[in-house]
Image 1 (tube, rainbow, N blue to C red):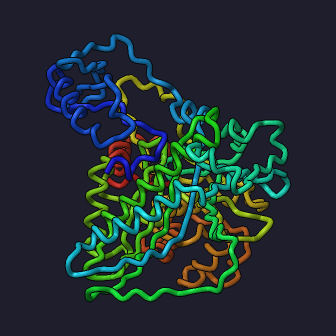
Image 2 (cartoon, rainbow, N blue to C red):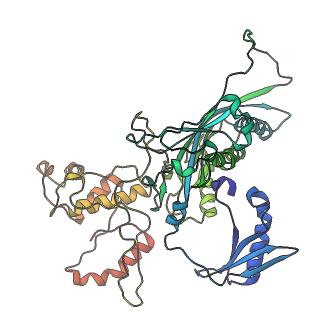
Length: 504
């Protein structure tokens, strides 16, 4: 499960034990559990030390220990733990993403004497062998704009150096200088000024795009006529076509060579995903349609990968239960969508030159502008905040001068952006004109209102939310700002139970 969820390049370094109290014994229990788990994590099997921790429920205080496995576990407490102020920046300053997408249709032959899992395993293993074989070449491309000139680079797995010359694959260096192809670092194709913004506000750099090219031609130079061999099956079989959409990401150090990144991270990641799909495929009763999605839910600095069987859509009972299981696995709340297909990161950038529809999901507006503000300074005060992310709409945006009359319009746009970013709706954030047209449509305003500079208030805002989203509003009335503190407890309860933005 961990190998499927976590991108290659990230390693699980330990375990945390959560109970009513924190203790050294609990840290030892965490170490014992992790030692059993790491046999399923190939990158950790040869490690003799790891980190364990112990904490109590309803506390943020954690005791960390270094655990060394000798004849028995020996642990030593960390006396000093440094918490990074900007962990996302620390991660992505030193790392980059590699992304590889492939669409496959795998024929699986099912017989009465062999299980479907066994048959599917044979197909997966054959394709995995092709990925690691001399016929596979990987084209690495920079996430680049139309104005930038950067040719792709062709690489093979480092294990295949002895056959690289046979196929005469030479790297196209473009503007990357005099780097040797074998030592060309990932940083040469990384971009620092383009990001994909997750719903939690984490900026993830656009990945290096990797394309798998399979050499299909035969090396038999002897002239011969084409031939088809017919070999009848020895028993009754049925054939199903398993639709597979591989979409693998991995994290690599910017200093790691592209060859190492492909051979040690990307190829194993593709094989991990194929194996995970083998487990996810239900080949007994129907034609599976497996799809891969990447998410970066709140609390995560990196993508996590999920495989769904969407043969009958996302609302199928089995898929709903699978998402509930993943919410529990990732410690996500159950009161809002976080790992549905609409929440997925779109890591591929738009190709302006070709016009291809590989647009990424993100925003060009400021988001979550309240983060980073200093405390009010009220001693013993309790802060109540919005949950989730929103886009900040304000006067004069979109070349529209609404200074003095557009306050509620902008507040409404900000509120609707919250519902969009939390994937409650696919309705576009309405323009001022759309808001006015909606109020005319429901009979609240006359037709002359459309195109005017007439301001609106909370009542009109609630009408539009009800019409466009089906969302009801509660309006609190105060005679002046001096009375606002009387509503503080009610507002705090709203943020605790609803978490949506409010307009004052």
